[in-house]
Image 1 (cartoon, protein in one colour):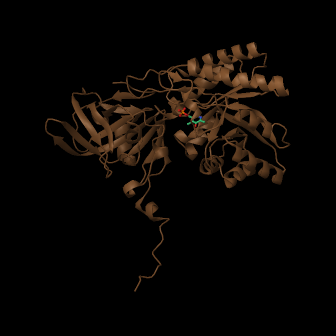
Image 2: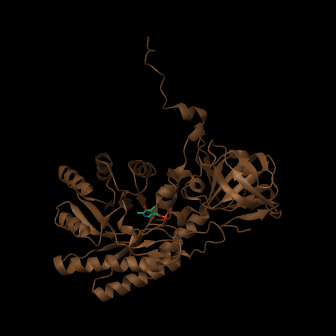
Image 3: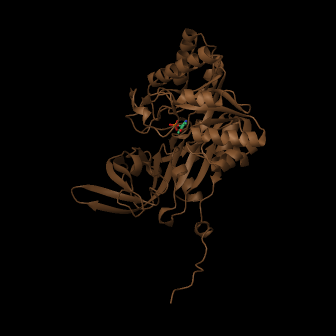
Length: 438
Ligand SMILES: *Cc1c(COP(=O)(O)O)cnc(C)c1O
């Protein structure tokens, strides 16, 4: 059984951060997300310290759509990370958390006027500009407020990285960014380069997710830096920032073979240095945006096993007290995970179960034909590597309250997000006031 971070098996129970998960399930209830914050710190340092060691000025921005809450933002601040937000709601949460505004970067393909106003009002460090409509809004807001704002232009370099390979044409059909190859990026540059309040720092690209190779990043860096070279030659503009996005892969199952953070960073630096030398550009700051790779394998979901159903000759189901409402990835993307019975973690996995959720959808299955210990009602099922795009995509489908989230480290545990109550579910509901028709 693969254990992540500080996970151990003690007295037959799975522990995380020195805390018994069965006891956590009892104290906080299930479904429960448990985050190994030491592992998050280790990953953050793996990225940051590699830049420092190699003397490259950098920002490592936590792409917080993977898992956003006040305590997560405070943890990112403790680790001196920067922060990517993609909505007014994430930005508001970050400010509430006391995250340093100058290290917040704002992404999104349809930022509203109100969201951009909030970005100016809170004085964030950078807006990653996605489209021409946004340029017009930014000009209007910055001129009205007479306030400067750092910007990057998001471009699509025509490199789309997948888990084990990349394609070099596929990305043109993307809802994000200015196309680097058809003149859109040049037009965007022309529109912002001499603006009195919009301070263009450089370019951004994000080529995919769950990437296990470094070639895609190198290729994208080459294409984006070629454009930087052209803008320097043609307009005397020297970009100071190259943002290469996120997408660093993690291990969900034994088929996934991720690289250590330092490998991604070292290879990126090498290719940027090589391109800078070739193009006679000064070395830009490198910004990266890991999301999944900071929090993904640090998160474990705990559920209580309830009903069981045998479909003779086909499969055995066990059902748990959560499902697609707290982890939609299996239903949405066929995402694969591994799991164990937390209170029988030292026993062999000699059973095969399909783990169903409790939501009213046939597709609400968390695991298909998974190897597990023999299960019975009341057991605690631990599903691994659910820290990214789990809670952050949670819903109240079927009016199921969203789970609680607990952080554990060095034998201590704390609630990071309370479990929703039934009262929370109706807090925004209003009574019917329309009169019944005659
Ligand atoms: C989602 C996203 C990321 C993070 O992706 P991960 O796969 O979670 O690392 C980074 N940058 C941008 C622009 C994104 O949209």
